[in-house]
Length: 281
Image 1 (tube, rainbow, N blue to C red):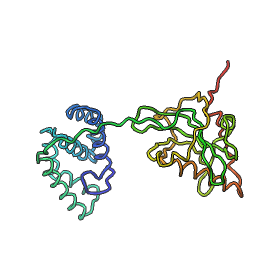
Image 2: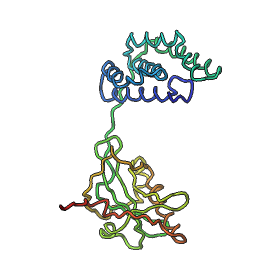
Image 3: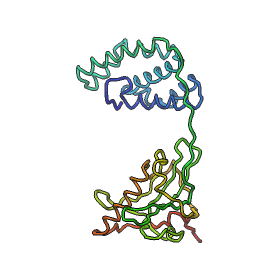
């Protein structure tokens, strides 16, 4: 169940089902089709004594908010609450007497809410489509704390999505002159080993929510061909939204660390990230 409180929505099952409902609702599906789809998809949850109540509570609340509460769903929820089935479940899960009392009050208020007709349906949210701020292959430079130029390469640009992500690899470029195309092609990915970083490679998906405020720090100076396609859905790379913190600041700190300490022995060549490896046989 993954509960973190006594509120109706304070558990993983409810949060997931409710969130999935409105993902589909905002895509334009009607309440009946969404409910059928989620019921079919979540048979494991529905058949779980621990999770099924939260599933039906989430469906009921979402339907009610859309002014489409199905009578059968409402009766199912009323039975769960009025029979004491949900409270018995909480007892079986060793809930304290205090939590049982709180839960009972929550359940009663929830039933009153969904049996009171809502004035209007919750509006659908229009999905905003965003484009990434950089193109695939862009070579980026920025000033480091030591006054030198640092560099990063854009390995992928995911277009026409809600987030507009770029996959960016920070490099070991650290020089007084503006880096050239060859500098980018022949460098390595910067690997962090300062402080508590344990050979962390700086390759991350960049969500540009704060880009406008730090755009002046970054310059596109070159472009290289990227022969490899990076699939966001199959990627194991982390995400970041602060280019200045997770790239510029981290790169500066790593090079400062290397003034008195050794760099990581691990190596990842940029060439290996941009060029396909051909097999001959």
